[in-house]
Length: 229
Image 1 (cartoon, rainbow, N blue to C red):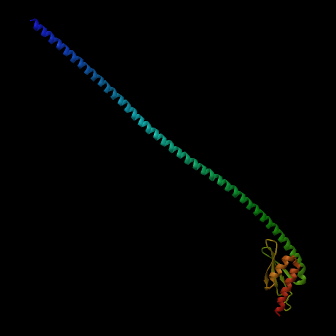
Image 2 (image 1 turned 180 degrees about the vertical axis):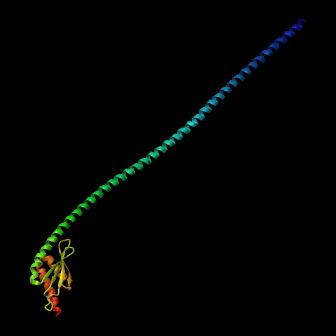
Image 3 (image 1 turned 120 degrees about the vertical axis):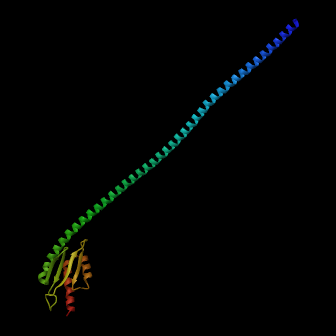
């Protein structure tokens, strides 16, 4: 009886020890599993947080790159605008310089035109005065030389000589005398033509002796008359 009781106690102790061992082992495994689960959960949450942060970082980098590109594009546009503005300013300055030069040139032309106009008016007045003097001088020869003076257009005088041809004292011999823009004698329109017309014109330009010109003209026409005999 006592032997049976001892065996039962031993068996119970073994059972309790075994149960204790299993319990402890089970608790350790359960604790380890819980820790593992907590670790896994923490890692999952941490992974999600860092994944989100990584995505946010990637988006931030993309935005920064986009902003950088936009700033670069804006800078390029600003440089282009500045270049266009500088070109426009250069054109304006060039046009201003051109306008100044043009205005200066126009002023010079205007002054030159006024000088020429004044000179022309002066010469015109002088030519009219000379024509009057010619008419006065020629009037002295009219009665003696059979000279007739006709006023033509353009401030020209036609001198008609008669009493040259003995066979026909009324036969006219004429030429036209005027002044050019430089105030020099112009002797032309000889009727009939004479070979020494250019020589007579050059001589009167040099000597300014109108009376001698009339005398030389009459001699030239008289030579023609003698040749016609």
